[in-house]
Image (cartoon, rainbow, N blue to C red; front, top):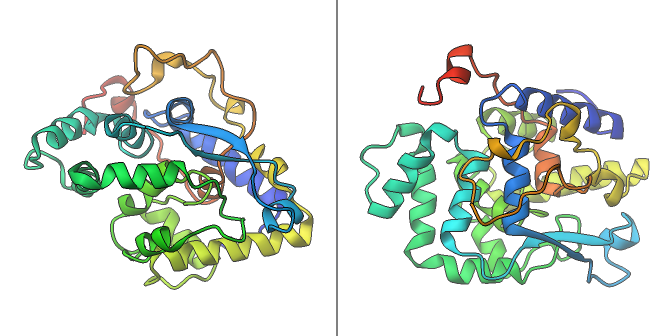
Length: 283
């Protein structure tokens, strides 16, 4: 990818990602809406006036994890956004039983992430995430706790290691699959053996540089993700839908999470085959 990072480039790439997602059986924009409704909240920016997010990018608010999110609720959001729906029930059963032996190999790393969190780390990690009101474009976008977490794995390892943090820190951490990771490392000139902290640092630097040159502000950038252009919202298509949750009748106003906006500049879901569309049990 030799394209420059411009507003038009981002809008076109994000639109193409959502267009392809509309043809995928998982209907990811709808799953993103469901997870946003259940797990995240938009809060006022509490950074001081000198922080880059406010001074240079016009930030007024941040997305963050709600307080007291339970592990099962996190797991449902993680699965609906990042795992094919055909594997959801098998993964939930495996995590509940602590036994991954019946899982397909492609989702065993998702099991590893979930079982490790369930095994004792969830309370501390979720509490710290809910208390951390920052974006990737804030001057103090990490603290020592999260820096250690981000440095603990290489981006060439399982893609699910990064994806867990995108649920926990939706305005900071960027998810990827293997193809979009390769596009990002090539386009942004990031070493393929970088750890996740190094990866985020480079993504931050490259996008901030271009935003500064073109005068792109965060409120405007958040509106680049407009899934309704390609996929009508239908709450009946929500995976792992929670009966007591009101998901509304439409997508929330155009105010997207930084993690998903940056990801969609590179991520293209594959189109479901006719057999997959008509038979959700096909794996």
